[in-house]
Each structure stands twice: as C-alpha cells, then as structure tokens.
Length: 283
Image 1: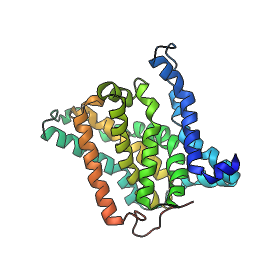
Image 2: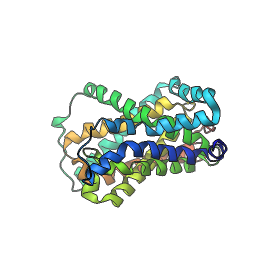
Image 3: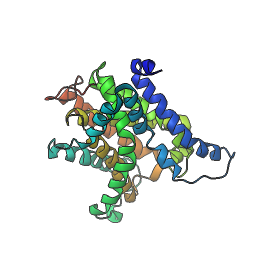
Image 4: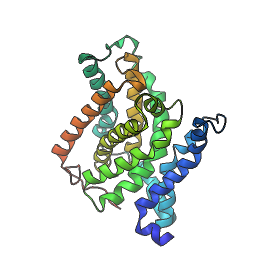
C-alpha cells in the first residue's frame, strides 16, 4: 500500500479526503433522506478539515515526520511583500462588488449600500473563515496536491485539475442545511449547482496558484485568500443585490468577473509558472 500511495500520491490524497469528509457528512445526508434525526451541526466542522488532514496523512506516509514538518512549515511563510497580502484580500472584494454592481445595472436587484457595516466588523468573520476553510483545506489542495501536479503540468493546467477536484469534493455539502450549497441545490438542482460551483472553484484555483507560486509556496496566503472570498460575499450580501444563495444572476456575474481577472493574470504572468520572477512550486 505505501508503494501504491507513493506512485499515485494525488489520487491517494483525494481518496482519503473524500473518505474523511464522507464519514462526517454521512449523518447529515442520512438526515436529509429522512433516515435519522438531526445531528449536531458542529460535526460538519470536522469534515471541513478533511482535505488538510488527508494532505498531512499522505505526506506522513510518503515522507515521514520530516515531510509533515515541511508541509506545516509552509504556513509560516509570510515575508513576501505587502502587495500579495493586498491582492489576496482585495481582489475578492473587487470581484464581489463588481458582480453586484453589474447585476443591479443589468436587471438584477437594486443595490442598497445603506446596510453595509464598517469594514472593521469583518475581522472576526475573516479570522474564522481563515481557520475553518483556509487551515481546514489548504494544507491539502495547495500544500500537498498543487506542487505535485505542478511537477508534471504547467501552473495553469495544474490549477484546473486542483480546481475540479476541489469543486467536486464539496458534493455532500449540497444536502446539509444551512450551508450555502444546500440552498443552491434546492433552487437550481444538484447537478447544475455542483457544476456551476466547480467552475467557480476552478477560477479561484488559478488565483490560488498565482498567489502560491509568487509567495514561495505559502499555505498561509492560500488560507488567507480562502477566508477572504466568503467574507466579502457575506459582506456584500447585505446590499440586497447579491440576492442570497438562490439568485443565479449575481453568481454568474461573479464568475464572469473572476474569469476576466484570471485571463489578465494568465496573459501577464504566463501559464507556465503564473509568475514572472519565480518558478512554479513543485514537490
């Protein structure tokens, strides 16, 4: 078994991530099907850490404790210039604001900024999302899977592969209320919601790689970006133009804005490394 894992490390990681996540999301799916009574929602937070746990476990099998320490050490990489911190924080804000503006201008719900709270009120939510979503996942997607895929593919192709894996990994969440994916599934149907979200996660994945490769392989910046994305969507949801989790209009505009940003990144930085100064991070 260890030899098989070493031969197919990314596949092994993905299987373990799905298994760990499946163990802790199965009770919610059983409840959705009416087979068991409701279960404590806190269990879902364990499932949220399945990708990082899988990355750490498979790293331990392949490289031992030294490999695990090296992987965890990527969370301590933070000295790479304020510009990358600002990009990770503000590009999701600009994309979300752009999508609600475009939606309101082209027939969507009117934009009402009167309900927006002071920006400092976002700090607790941002920290929670960085820990829950960022730390919970990014040791797996960016810390483990991305460098290994970049050893065989250019940065753009590796990003797309990770993005598709990451997007499809979310499938149990479409049956767990009150997660966003649950309301999308109710409104749009399971398959359309899963496909649209997977495209969105893949667009984000290109930006993750761009940030990761330009910051010496920092899992910290990936976790920070992962936390910033849902923080800004929650913030601008109060404008009314976002329309909550069931309004496809702003979501499509959101995808479009991120697509334009990604086209610019690929054009400027190139698909090989998504960086003009650094080579893509490999394992």
